[in-house]
Image (cartoon, rainbow, N blue to C red; front, side, top):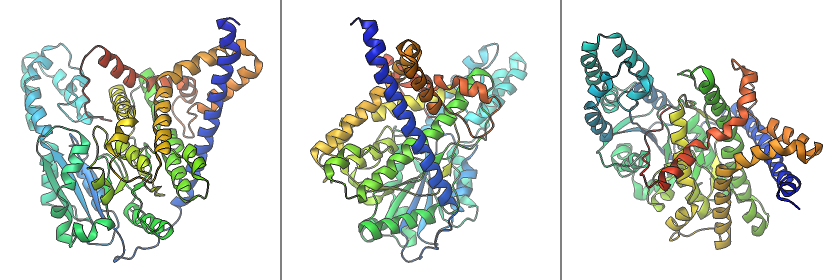
Length: 505
């Protein structure tokens, strides 16, 4: 058998079978999870007993969030919850001020060019302000451009300035607001969260909380600053905690609220780039339902099932926690040594999965922004790949902790995650080659390829401006998600350090 015959008669059928199987599974998972969320959304939660609800500390780490900081504070302090059992903490960081000081020296270089591009202002101004600032500077006389940009730069308040003003005159919501400001000690979002965890006595102490007495009834609830929560969110966290305790006799280590990238406060660019970003939005929505939520629900099902452990071991998923609506039991995060860098959510989900901890989902979703620039998508996927590519590191980090999983079960989880990462890197090119070759492999495989493509493709249920163009461009979407990881790999091979900026939307 020649290499060409082996490709057409062995490799192509295997790859197309895998493509179709994954497409069918994704379609079913998305439908089931979407129906579960929609059905649950119509239910009115039972009012919680004020004496029995858990203590909740809502953590909002912020970096260059001037445009939405006040709006976020108002949304989260307005959440319904029994008084005296929860607080909202905004964590700003001196890293923002240090970066501004360093960036000020770049202003002259930026105004020296004939036309200032908005993208060159990223990091100097909030993302939503860059285009407006660039247009103002470009409209000024050449001799005045540096002065105009400097005045705008100096007049831009930091996130800490805005939050401090809001904290001095709170919006009057149900929940108290605490502002914490982290020194410039490096790190990312996880560092800000851990800074707040070290100060829980300062945050919850005035409400009568004591860690020695109340730790087992306390959750840290993590969000992104651009999230918009449902008012019932915290009450449903409490309801899920009570339900799980009643069924399992213990508190869940993690309760995941599902993040849906459905806000559109900033438009997607026009043209081919906008088309690919719109596809990323739909692709992420499908992933949110068909992978992230589906894995949490499968994990919960296996926790309570009577299946033999040998079967559960092969079915048990590695859960991808999402740091926008992630409630972590305080004893669990203390046992982990805090939220892990570089991604507090993926690291937490991986480590709790390897411990066999109880993970569950709440039935109300949180809305946040989709990405509207390619750089944000590339940076996010590179960072996610970094956090996921070494599950053995996560296993080593929790090796000293008691686990409900056997060594073989942990090994299966680690191997499955490595297989997922390998599929991420090489799956799209191999699947594309198999689809292109399907015609020569035979009519049955041509049908399988078409079915797999249709089920995988992000066919929107909304009415985008160019639905046929969006569907036609959908096969390119997996390649968009490859840009970040492969750029990271090439950078490391070249011996250059790859830093990660803020994953701005």
